[in-house]
Image 1 (tube, one colour):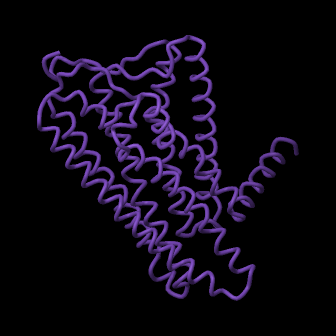
Image 2 (cartoon, rainbow, N blue to C red):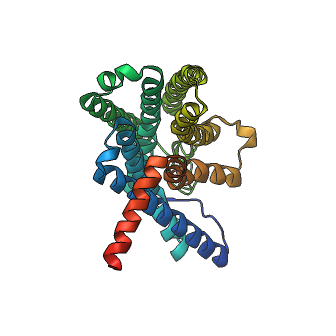
Length: 312
């Protein structure tokens, strides 16, 4: 292929060549996606319908659940369809749309997690100012800023990536369209422009990471000054889920984009991509639900209500 204008489709990386393993992959991804849809749907329903959860922390958790639903719905269905039918192809436009959505959801999640760490900082370190600093209007503005920044960030990367001339074939070394894999197909030195954007992106992620670290240093200092053990346990119970989500998301994402080329191989890249794009949307609601007593109580009451409706 001489340039990108002759490319009408890309070939995605298959999970396996044997038919039995392809069907196994389909079943595994089907289970993960159904679990993610159910768990995130329950979180969204609980926060939206129960007035006891109409607080800033749960408002941001609702936004995180929406991001997780969008993220897993962008990559998994196409991978499942390819495994089920034994295909590898995705259209040029489909690849561009998938890349845009992947970056949009992941790019929005990073500032949202940073905002959630600020919410925990204010709630624990400045409880008397919580209602002032995190009023309903301020929460909406911060969430809107996170979504808008993710949209602009994704638009910039997608437009820049697909403006590059591609002449190294059309085989993408990943199960979904990913920037580093598209850059490998470029035959022009202009790929350095996109590489520069990736470096800027890493710097922004590092700034978010440092903000989260500083916030939690202050939080832990404040929690350790709480005299009662029950108060410390309650404060930690609202922070640990967020820390677990941040560690899973940033840890796998940074490893995927910052690992040395010498340790890169298709199998490892595939595994890391699954860890940062598929696993978090399914695990995040479980982390928050299992460690959050209020969320468990709301879900328990909802299940009891449904059982009474079914078996009066």
